Every structure is written in C-alpha cells, then in structure tokens.
Image 1 (tube, rainbow, N blue to C red):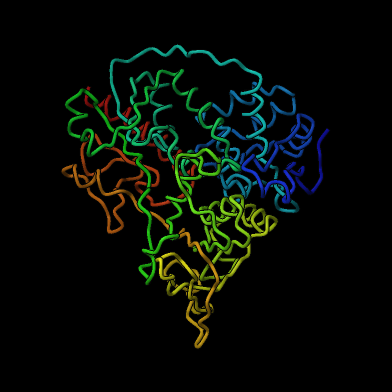
Image 2: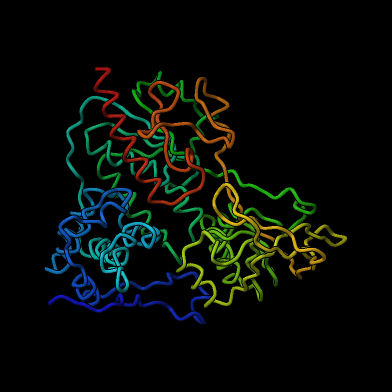
Length: 462
C-alpha cells in the first residue's frame, strides 16, 4: 500500500540528556517495519530525479522497491553496484541537499528518507550476511592509491572490480581517513568503517598503513615499482588558523588535532594514551560540520559550556541542519554574528578567554553570501579555557613538494580535470586534495570518476 504521509518516519535517537554524556551512536536506525513504511512513500518515478542528485548515481528507486518487497539483501546489492561504502554514506552524506532535494515527494511535504533507508539496508546486510572473498579475474595491471579515505577507497573498490591489482598507501596506522580521525564515534561508529574496509579487502585491495608518500616513498618510485596509474586521494588535513594573537597558547587546538585525539586515539577513554585538555568552557570557531563535531565532542568530554562562535548568521552556516539541531538539543550555545580577534592567556600561558567582536551582514561577497562586517564598539570577552579552530583545511604540501610536474592552485590543491587527470601523466587526483574540504560522497564520486579514467588510460597505453 502506498504511504501518502507528508512526513518522513522519524529516526529513533538517544535522548539528548543521555547521548551528551556518551560517545555511542546518536541515531539508532529504522526497524524493518519503519523501513518498509518509509519505502512505501516512494512513487518510483520513471525519470528518477533523485538519481541525478546522487554523486555516485545509486539507482535509488530500484533499491527502495526492493525494500518494499522486503528483499533487503537485494536492496543492498543494488546500492553496492554504485557505492563502496553504503553504511558510511547512509550516516554522513548530506542527502537533504543531494538526492532528497530532487525527490518529488518533497514538493508538497518531506522527501523520502533516502539516506535513512540506505543506512538501514547496509546495516541489515552487515548484520545478516556473511560476506566472503569475491573472485575477480586479475587483468595483469597494477594501480596505486594514495590515501585510504573516502575518495581513495571508492577508487580502489572500482578498480579492483575491473580486475586491477590495487594497493592503497595510508599515512596513518589505520585506514579510513577522515572517516576514522575526523567524524566522531557518535555519528559514525568506527566498527562500521572497518567493516566496509574489510569488504574492499575481500575484493583483493591491499592496504599498507604507516606509509607517508613523499617521505617513506615518492610517486616516482611507485612508477618504478610497476604501478601504471596512481590516484592521489590524500585529503585536506592541513589545518588553517586565523593568525590572531594568542593562537599559540596552551589550550588552543585545530579541529583536526582535537578530533584526531578523540576519534582515532580514543582520548575520551580513561586509559587513553593521548592527552587532551578537559575544559570547563570551550569555544569552537567555525560553522561547518567539523565545528559541530568538535563542539559535541567537547560536551561529551565534560565541558560545562560549549560555544559555537561563527561570524555569520545561523542561516549561513554550512553545517547540515540535522547536525545543528542535534547540537542545540545537546546544549551547545550558538554565538552567531561573532568573530574572535584575540585569545588571552594567563601567566602560565594557558587560555583564559577570547576577545570577540559582534558582526553584522553587509553586501554579498564573491561566494554570494553576505559579507560580515564589524559593529563599532562591540568588543567583549568570552570566558573560555579552550579554543578549537574549525575554519577549514588544505592539502598537506608534502606530495606536491616531492613530485615533479604536479600542478597545484593557490590553495595548495591539486589541479585536475573533470576526470581526475592531473598535469602529470599517469597521476590522477580527486576528493579534498583537489576541491579542498568537502563531503564524503563528493570525494567518493571523484574517486569513482578517476577509476574509470585510469582504466581508460591504461587501456590506451597497452
């Protein structure tokens, strides 16, 4: 029976009072009945507008139709034809601005909860299926992937399915990239990431960790080792700062450092090897998803007051609406139209406060957003003992500094065409290493596009 409700099935979640004290996953997932009921809201449009909004072109109506029939494994197989990381994407992709924004049901109500259904299908598969090694015929050619984040993993998965011998080189001790060091456990459990990576290994993908390209081994050496095409998906892990007084004080973190200590190194556990300052009052500067992740993590570490300090208004925040609402429910305090100008310290060089000014929105800038300007005589002191800078990242310069002929732009991002081809023959790039910090699914889309181009490149040479 079609479900003509104008509203999505609500996602069951931990209550804010409980979840703000633990690192367990906030969203609990649909039951089978909820998933089937939500699937029945889909009209199965013939022109499939939702597919056009998906960066990896999942056949969304087809997998939803399988859910209606309660063929959950069949739904997973449809998704996995296009996506290597469905359990991840179902949790962290901004579906509201992608596939769900194109859904016909969204014209007169809420769109079908495509992301929640993708998560349900992937979780059902992981709980009920015993995946085995996949037999793939090796085509006699080797490809190297630099970076085991979303872009690199997506590229590796597609190349492996084509028959290539694929080796992924990861600088950290654990594969996953931003999925393991950046996104908190309460949004994306690391066991799910490792399960998805294990599925890639079963395709024959080899992953070598603790390999820093440009230091351990250089790109030129990889070609000498017989790799015919190389994909650079090294992400954008170099943090940016505001260059204001006091940023070198103790208690000032980049969001990358703070979240890496929390997520990858488990600083929230009492027996963790890595130190992190447990603060009373924390300011997180920025308005994106990373800022929300840092603020919500600081709250879970025991901070009494956590402030999001953002120079524009809430409507201009780039973070997902869901993340903003979850942060508010957990008691995060939003100080919008506010900008730091100095971080103050005590005699021991620890953070003692943050001087801020109030802002107002002026004319639009080159990005189309209204430019924030300072209000006169509006300076005030925010009482904090920890500051986390979440204002963006750029690619690490190590690879570009050790590779001849690999062009980058003024932001240090690799220059690549729409197929991922760089200025260096045989080298492809995609994801945050090309675009700067963006979304998981866009990085995956770039990896898939590059895999196709790498296949064409190797075939042309041979």
